Image 1 (cartoon, each protein chain N blue to C red):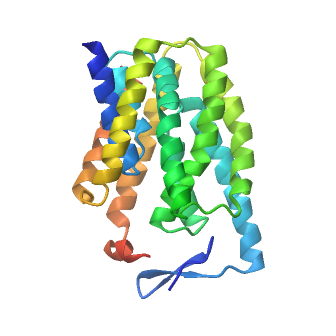
Image 2: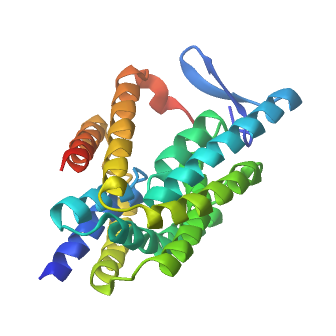
Length: 128
Length: 144
């Protein structure tokens, strides 16, 4: 039965991810708060879950010519470095700290996005 | 006006338009892209999530990409990052198949559904609901 709930948590996050809204930020709290999974295990599951979906999405986007590769290197190289270091950091943190940090991150993103949403001019949707 | 790649986004009469960037602005933009990369990588590594939520605005505001372009390119950014993190996690933490396998299946199904829904369902209400829920979950994680 628990199996089905895990699938459901994945589906809910996946729907948002497919719509381009950041699925992991929903899957992770669902796994941790509702299902009682450890934070690192949830993160690990979310990472693996993204690999096939992300590959499929990337393949489609590249095919449709939506991925802009120029200058991407400038963003990716430093990201590789910090990502490697912080991944090791994540696996070393003890206790609830990782969960609390992630909670803080969620709050910041949520408040920032809400503020942006309220103050963005409505005709932004006209951009092409 | 058609969009040139990594063009300057300017607002004319409250509508976003795109100009070809100058060499100087290109240099500045690369620097900001690199700084954003540092931050995106750090977040995606430590939380195994959230990189996309940062990469989309970074590519849009710094890169000057449009909505579809920034979302698509963000996946090209976070996919390799997630791959690195997965390798690191797999070396240093235990694999719990009972959690991972159903989640992988669910996310894949959900991803397809979400991509199909994208054209039909969007709107402010969904956004507010999502961010409200996110704030609630975040507070609960900090104080639980």
